[in-house]
Every structure is written in structure tokens, then in C-alpha cells.
Length: 356
Image (tube, rainbow, N blue to C red; front, side, top):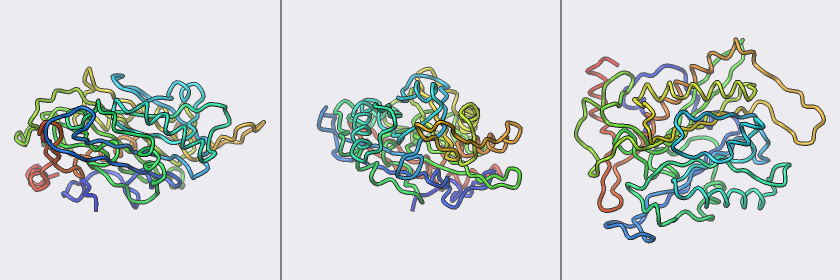
């Protein structure tokens, strides 16, 4: 079972859903495909390989269009399809995350998958949303090992319920605060005007310096100064964050959620470095947008009622990053580069020391 930060005795604010995952938002499913093979010196095109693909499907299998919006805190990265999301306020189809140099392969494979399943949008073209972070410190990134079959396996394996975290899917070769990083997720349940809503976050965490790492206010990074990667790493990483909710929000309100993501990142120790690609998308499953309908009835929470969702976004983002760190395991990749996992027992001790 995937370890989460709460299993280390860390007490975080807010009420998670039953899976503490983005899949607590009804209809949302997640799938991974992971590629790990080879050891030793880098031979471009052969390995070692430490990479993969993660797929997030926002709604049930018919892939109904939903409202969405994005936000870029620092743009040294890519999240394709966002021009149209921003223009239309609509997301159609899955979101996939992979390594920086495999965006093209994943983009093409998602279109193939949608066509094969007759899930293309009402338009005659598809603009998939594909995010990336750089795994080239551990992975043969220029070997282009991600193929269409791997993307399709990730999409076909997407399911609700528990979500594998850490060294899986797109997060396989990622590094966070100079510990092993990767995929993490968390959720929050809130009540607004006597109605229950769920919000979830999923991150591909690949950023940060050790000295900045904080866990619920505990300066873990300054306390644990050993277990550093065997290769020097500066703040050159990135993070992709996906926020999902079932509250009836319109695109401009979803952008407001996306803009709260950096507050959760900052609590863990991000300052959005110059070469960090910190890019986010938020969507709501509450309203579906049927193409060709002459008139669409919508629901919308008034702005004065959405503050609990702002707080939930901050909390879920923070915990998703911490879950990525907790779930990830030590990995050795190209040229013998080793990145260590977060030492769980030492974190427990520090939590006790600081009374958190």
C-alpha cells in the first residue's frame, strides 16, 4: 500500500476524502504506465530507463466536456492545449503527464486513443492537455522510450479509488527537494451552504532545494542535510498540478482555484525558480457542456461562497506534494546517479521534536 505523509505522524489541516486522492471527486479516474529497466552508464537510446506516463480522465468514459482553467506561475515548462482551454473555458478529454522530451509522443497517442474509442470532441480536431517535467538526471530522456502503446496502457488502466503514488507513471524519474519525488495526490471534503463538495489535487513533483523543504512547518530540509543525490542538482525542476472538484464553478472561478496552488507549494518550500515549470489546471465535473445544444442550463456557486474551496486547494496541494515525497523510494538511474527517499523514521522524530 502507498505510504502517505499522515502515516508518519504528521497532522495536517482539513478533512480528506475516503481515498485521500483526486479520485475522491466522483467520475475522475487515474492510470499509470511505468518503464524501469537497465543499470549503469547511460547509452542513449538503450537506457537506463526511468520514466512513464500518468493519465487523468476528468469524467466518466464518455469524456464529457467540463469547465476548466489554467495558471502558469513560472513558464519554464509545457502544458499543451491550454490556449484552447483558456479561450473556451472547456476541457475535453484526458490530461496526461510524462517527461519533457516525450510530450509529442503522448500528444499523438492521446488523439489516437480518443479516435479509437470514438471519444473525439464535437470539433474536427483534438488539442490534448499534456504536461511534463524533466527526468533526465535519472532517465535516458533522449532515448525517447515512451511509445503510443505505453500511453494507451495508462489511459486504459485509469480507474477510480486508490491511486499509486511516488515512483510511478510520469513521476517515475522525478526528484523533489533533492529527495526522490514523483506522483502525489490528496483530497479535501468541504461543506458550503449545507452541501458537501470534494476537491482533489494530483501533482508530478520535480522541483526544489533540500534546504527549503518544510513539512507542516518543520524545517526538515535544514535538519536532514545528508542523503543528498550523488549528482549536484540546482533548482531546475518543475511541478504540474491538476485540481479537480465537483462544486459548480465556472471557468473564471476555476482560474481562481488554480491561482491558489502556489500557496500550497510555498508551504512545502517552493519559490518557483527561474527554470522551474510550475503550471496548473483546474476543472469541475459539476456542469457538462454538450456541443451543439442551443441553450445550456448551468449551476454556479456565488463567489462569496467559494472560499472553502480556496483553502481546500492550498491544503490538498501541500499534502499531495508531501505524499509524493513519502511514497517515493530510493532510485538509482543513469551513470549510477542515486536519489534517496525521504527517511520516514527521521521525519517521525522531527515531527515529535517540533511538536507537529
